[in-house]
Image 1: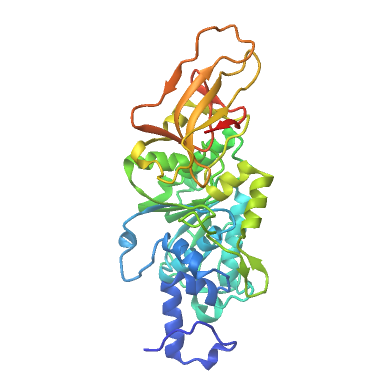
Image 2: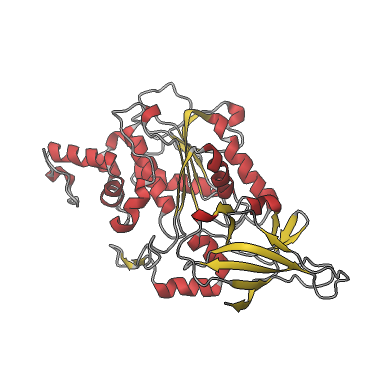
Length: 416
């Protein structure tokens, strides 16, 4: 049987029908091959094969309900690691395997969702630079009219179920539920953004939109969520905490460092156009030094709090982990942090007993409240011990004021 070549000739007419069929079959089953050889992207096998493996594998020989044992996936990889582009590849491959599919697309805003749709559509229209999709899968492609393309949807002409009212790919909108639309799978990418994570109202809107899409999904309700952490209260931590009980999600959380903590996950290298992508230690250190909180969230997927961030008791309770789950690579045995918020009306200062691993993640064992300067309280501070064999796993340390916790600073007082 002919083998699909790793590179394509300029003129595909030079290939035999058998080789063309092998290329089509491989593109429908191998996401990395589809991405680099057919769609002209620059994924790196040593980095991105693992990313593609976190996404569903499409097999047209199986029924839709049996495509994946895990119907819901949460993929939190660092900024600059091609998560969104991987979703584009996944959606295109899904359409090639299931031309009657109904995909619902969602990002942080309608504008960005439509932009993502345009990139997907460009491959089917033949407008994407270097893409060979139109040549290899002409029955799926066409012009704007053939694809029934609008700003918010398009339909492949390869669809056999012409009676379906929903498009092949549709941008989610709040009007969708009112018009009785349905979908087979939801791709929710980068819902939490720099523009919305600071606003509790906007974050609540993100949650409502995300969970509001669920009723539009026909069984078995496939959901793929991709993104990067921004906040202790974002949608993603809500999914993670809820799944600790329900166990419905397959979850992949990665940092910019290799799993062994020694190297870089996506080392810098040249793309085919001779431009660089990936990271070096110097680049990562520069980003970290410029904005440690941004680095912790976007490159470590471990949000660091700021002076204005308020934490609820429930949020801290959600970070409790069993002592046996604390990383074995913790560094110095003790660290003390001054968290004084200042002023007679401020929160209590706190001394935190903690250990830190090589990624800067702190496992807290105890919090001791101390009255702030100028306070009229004279009662000696009482250590707040965490539950037996439970550890508070955080990126930051916090002070406690009734049901609310506020961070003022994280300046080290001493290290033992």
